[in-house]
Image (tube, rainbow, N blue to C red):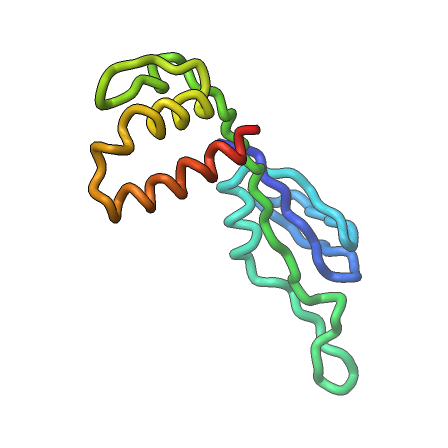
Length: 129
């Protein structure tokens, strides 16, 4: 399983135990844990401490959140991904493929679809440059 960060959003240090081991998360800081353990830690009830008036002390609040690592998919396309479905022509990149579709296949689309597809392809060309 992937390692996640458990953040303490409280302005006080978080102290508790998990599976017999002490857990200390600094104020505004984080610790790393396995995702399964993080879910169990967050599900553990906090040890709420009452003050003299009967209310709960803010330092006993459990203000934890889990941050999963961001997965960034590489925008790589192999030559097999860039083959025109209609005629089979290969393109070296997405911009070239968009140009090919605009030049060769726009007449094959219905008029309403042509306008919408044209706008999408023009946007792809602008982003590609």
